[in-house]
Length: 172
Image (cartoon, rainbow, N blue to C red; front, side, top):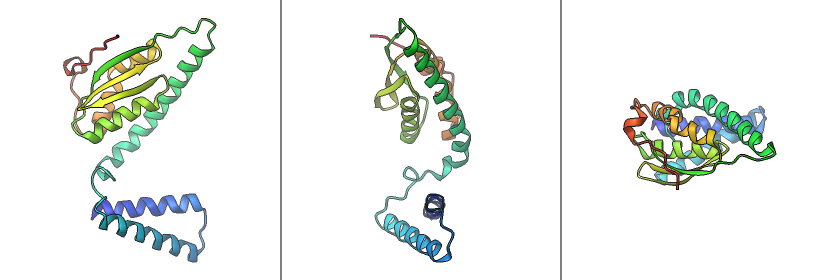
């Protein structure tokens, strides 16, 4: 029930922000459409902890700004690399084991890597990720394990030492 209520609240806030209308008739029609969508989603049994992870909400609010900062820093690194005359690319494929305990945590970690310019998650299987890194800085950043620890902390699990988690980078 908590998931359905929070989904309804999120949908209504999103509707208000995107529509920009504050006329009582339109607000009530928006609320009615949100209630209808939540009822249909509930009947289809698609409202669950993975589809709408309420437990991650507050921790995700702290993770989001950090991820945006990392995306901006990676953008600058890729732009510098491209604009250099000799274009010092050091592409490599890394095998990394994520320390997350749930599938949702692994997906968030893989998507965070893909959102960061210069890296892309090629394969995610049972917590093992195969990642393509465009530059040495991108590979070093991933092997440092900061993103892995932050995603694990957002998931609500204390991360362990990355060296003990099998975070060795391998190049082909």
